[in-house]
Amino acid sequence: MPTASQQPLHIVYALVVVYALCYQLQSPIEPFLVAQLSEANADAAAEYASLRTFFNCVQTVGSFLVGCLADVIGLRALFALNFVACAASYGLLWQASSMAGLYASKVPTLFMAGFLCAQTAAAKLTPAGPARAGALGRLTTAYTLGGVVGPAVGGRIGNEVAAPLAVAGSLLAALLVLLLPAAVDKEEAEEAGDGAGSDQGKKDAPPAGSWFSRMGQILPAVWPLLLTKLASGVANSAVGAARPIVLKELFSFDQAGLGAVMSAAFFGNALVGLALGHLSSALGGARRTVGCCLAAMVAGYAALAAAYAPDASAPQLGALPFLGLSLALSLAQFPLATTLTALSTAAVPPRLKGTLVGAEHAAFALAGMVSPAAGVGLFRAAGLRGVASGAALVYASLVAFWLGSARAAAAAAEKRKDE
Image (cartoon, rainbow, N blue to C red; front, side, top):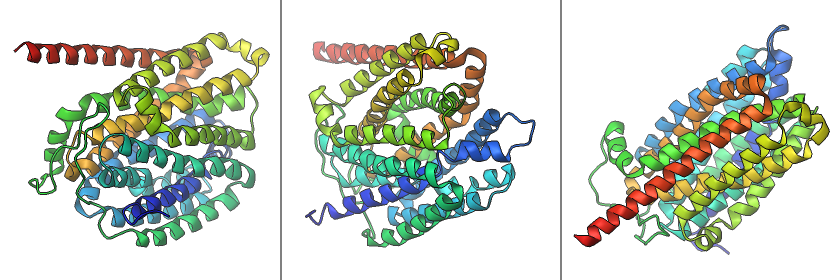
């Protein structure tokens, strides 16, 4: 039985499962809807990339807005608003009979930020260090539980059943939000982090001020982490936009097959999320965990580029190497993003955590806004090898950046010691 202090977190986990399930019901269907609703002479891949770009543009603005509102009006109200927005989006998707309808379904996603709300709640309810990394990891696991079932079921039942099911699930979750306490913004105990430091600031700190004032306080402390999240998001979003095209065109997958692939990736991430706190401690702390994940991403994308060079090798090799490497990359990608959040939320006071997590999600959405068209275009121009090589180059640059930052920090510490 969870203790009274743990009950809000368990409710948050349940909300994340429903949020992910409803969202992922649509994921394997959308590329095929775009193909059906596009004009006869249109490039369906380009249309899909444009739709993803529009979605991420809305999410970029919405993440900043929702993150700031989380610190002002509270998380329970925002959770409810999120699920109402989800229901509206899925309802519009259900009724879409043209590309304009698909674009209209993305407008309510301005307030669709369930995982942002959940991460902010976890950051406010747990102390810095392994406890927070573990809670954020369990959030990833909760999301992936919904993600395992959603794509597999959605790919089987199609939009006519998946969309109304997602609407009903979102409205049910909006009622479940009422079980949360009116305020989850409890004072956080200061505790030494695993290389991340302890939470800065107290409950009685002065008001954070306007959004610009908040960001002015946040950026000096976390800009390297936000830069890492943005750059890695660019690479991941480009590859993610190309992946369904690769599976459809090179390996002849249908929507059920695509859904099964997505579910397998989520299942692996669920297992990693459960053990993230222990994994971080075993690797020597959050910063070393980030370094290991970055190195793994370089190796994985380099191997993918080498395996499918040129694309003519795809029919001979088959889909199995691509699927295996994609799963391995996914297993490194999720703990990387989660550990970056654990590090950044430990660097700011509680009153700024919502704004910070909103900025992180905005960085991720911004990456998704600029990357899908680039990923699909790179695939058309240079094939699978080109997409994988570009991602490997981005991650290699991040490894160099983190090594340089570590050396600079060590030199600064040595200088202070000498003084």
